[in-house]
Amino acid sequence: MTPRDRLLAALRGRPIDAVPWSCYSNLLPRGETERLLRERGMALITPVTPYIREMPHVEVLSREAREGGHAYTYRTFRTPVGAVTEKRRAEPGYGSSWIVEHMIRRPEDYAVVEFMVRDTILHPNFEAVTELEADLDGDGVALAWTTRSPYQQMYIEMMGLERMVLDRADGLPDFLSLYQAMDELAERIHRLVAQSPATLIWNPDNLTDLVAGGPTFDTHYAPYYNHVADIAAEAGKIVVSHFDGRLASLTHSIARTRLPVVEAFTPPPMGDLSVAEAKATWPDKVVWINFPGSVFLETPDEVRRFTRELLAEAMPGGRFVLGITENIPAGVRVEALLALADGVADYEGTSL
Image (cartoon, rainbow, N blue to C red; front, side):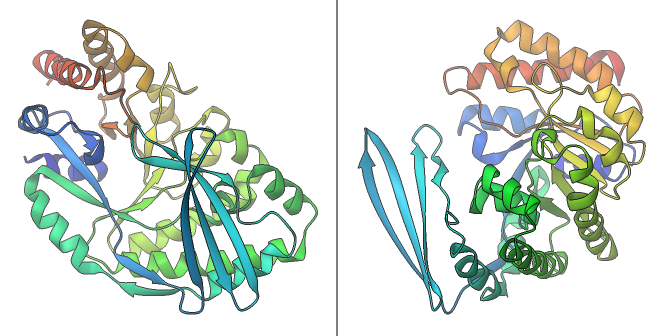
């Protein structure tokens, strides 16, 4: 089996010939290390967006600034009903950024953001998937980007957690109207992506029970997850849900959803739920883990031992993929990845 075939078989619950393991392609060191890992069966996972967004009646202005020794980007969105501005701080090590000032900070900002959502036009970009799959060949799989669920997008991208929680609790009409607009846009995105050539459809929710715990999940998340899972299944595709936070208190709620794959699942020592517990509670789901980043900071021998013992716990019964979905500190990246590959080989030598 190629790494691609093995990965897709594992995600469908079918027999495999070796440990299915993968890494986001942007996390890999280029050159000799990447070549060695691919030769040892690692699959490349590369996100791709099968559509292009357009907001024909929104003007977007961007400017860079340095403040207090840090780099920031300001993006202003001008619409016929007003303007909002988002401020992001750059993280130079991995080229990422995070929002430090959200676009919704006042009640009147809701109308502006809802206008932007309803003004969004989607254009198919299926060629991006076809070209990427051809480039990856048997060495990996394209992961088709959709969008976060409305509540996740609201607190992560639009308004922050405090405003989201308070405005939701108050039943603010503008909040509910924006949510409805976002839900409608998310459905359009999922239906379009399901028509693309991609097999794996990514639900990039970064879920954690710290935000989605208790009745919140059953009321505000589960219906959305069931709906997008059904859209994908009707098209013969697989929804891959990125749940990388604390999940122990959500175990049974997640079990009741129709989601087929929980991806970026982070076991101890960073997560609070073991792979064995998750598999026992989710008999119809595949657990695609995020290898705990803290382990990469240990010695290569410890990384190798941890990998071997993790596989001994997780592999029996199938429904498991070992994945790397978070940044690895540059100073230990090469030796840590090679040690992980050694741990995979150790397990295969004794158990497969």
